[in-house]
Image 1 (tube, helix red, strand yellow):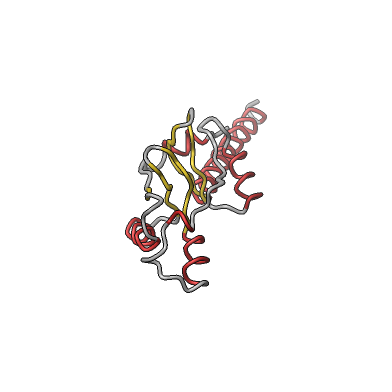
Image 2: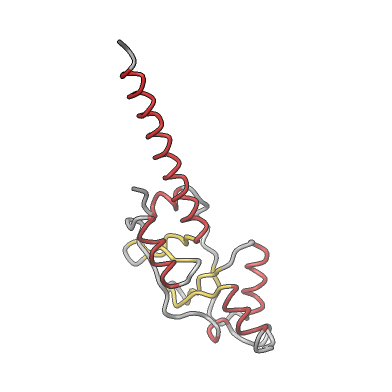
Length: 150
C-alpha cells in the first residue's frame, strides 16, 4: 500500500509560499511563474492558510477586486485539510474527493513537509494498479506454465 511519504519522494520537495500580507497579485504571479495551483500561506514560521487559483478566481475576477490592492490574508482559506506522510494514498484520495479539493498540505509532527495534488494521488494510484496487474499477469503465466509441464 502506497503512502503519502512515497508520493512525496517521487516529486519535487519545493514548497511555494506567500505571506498573509502579500498581495493577491503577488500570489498569482508566483503561481503563474511556477505553474502551480496553490501556495501555502506562512506567517513567520507558522502555516496560517492556503491560497489557490480557485480562491483568486472567485475573489478577484468574479468580484472585480483589484489584485494589487487586496492582501492574501483576505482571500486565503484558513481551515485547511491536511494529511501526514504515513497516511495511505487511498485515504488522501477519499478526503480530497469528499471535500472537493485538489491540493493538500502534508504535515509530519506539526512541520510542513510538502503538498500533494489530486494529480499526484491519481498518478500514484494508477502506478500501484499497474504494478498489481503486472504481478497478477506474471503469477498467472507462471501458474499456467506449471499446469502444462507434464
